[in-house]
Every structure is written in structure tokens, then in C-alpha cells.
Length: 205
Image 1 (cartoon, rainbow, N blue to C red):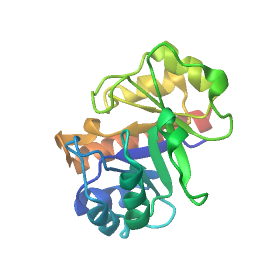
Image 2: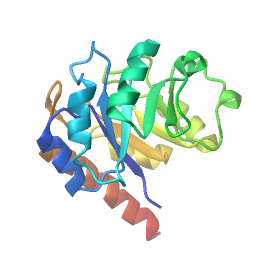
Image 3: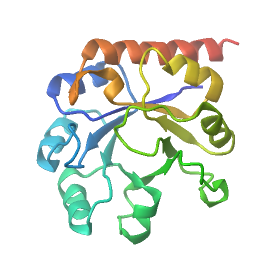
């Protein structure tokens, strides 16, 4: 067993080098202009070009226009496009790009509408709020679907989430920052270490 680790909101060469050295699974680049982690597609591509192929490139968008989606796809060339599930209804994406649909912990989630085969992202009602999802809700979703938990995770709480929820993966952004939009290499390394120690313990049980 290996928990997927997604580090989101990358903006600097040093942060990208850190995730490469520490073998994360997914790297998220935020293309929502209202976010302190916003990066232009051209700059994101320059950073992503440093990464080996086994680290998936994720384009993170929030209610984008078709023009914005096309620019990110054409310039950044992501492996995954991440946005709210409802945004995919009216958005064309090439078959070469996987969808990472965001479902929110708003108490109205219908699990029967969610794919069994594709990973999904489960987070709070508002992206970037730094708030954890409800543990019981996360557990219920993770029992039936392939779920990456996002929102409010950090080195102090990720082990508790892993133990209680047992998700497919975890997604961290603000929890490994020294200030909004600026990643801390030390916090990234610590977060990854906790997750991998959890994996090792589980595999040895």
C-alpha cells in the first residue's frame, strides 16, 4: 500500500526540486487568479518541465472559462485537470488528460453519482480555506470511492486523518507553507515523512 501524496500550489524552483527529491506522486499548479498560489501557465510549464514523468502534473482551476481551460491545456499540458465536478459538465477536455473532479463536503453529496474507477478529490466547501473536511463524512466517502482528501491538512493532523479515514491519497497546500503562496521545504519533507511512515507501518501489519 502506498498513499498518494499531492503537493499543491507550487510556484518556485526550490519547491519543485524538493518534491522531486522526496518522491511525491502529484504536483498541483493553481491557475485560479484569486489564489495567492496563482501561477501563469507559461511559468508553470517551466517548473513542470523540471519534473520526471512519474510525477503527475495537475492543473488546478476554479470555475474557469473555456478560454482559460484551453490556454492551460495548450501551454501547460497537464496530466490531470482538477476542478469542481459540475464544471466538467460544460467543459471539453482531450482524452489524453485525466479529470480529477472535486466534490465538496457540503452535506449534499450523492455517492451514486461518483465514478468508482477514477480518483476524486474531497474537500471543504471553499478551496484555500484551510479547513479540514468532516472526518465522518470523509470516512464514508473513502469507504466507497477512490478519494484524495484535501483541505486543512498539515503535519500535525495528517496522521489522524490517515488512521481514521484511510484515503487513497492526501493533498496539501497551505499546510506546507511558510507564508501564503510560498512553500517551506522543511514542512514538505516533514509531511511526506509522516505519510510514508504511516504506509510502512500499515504494510508491516
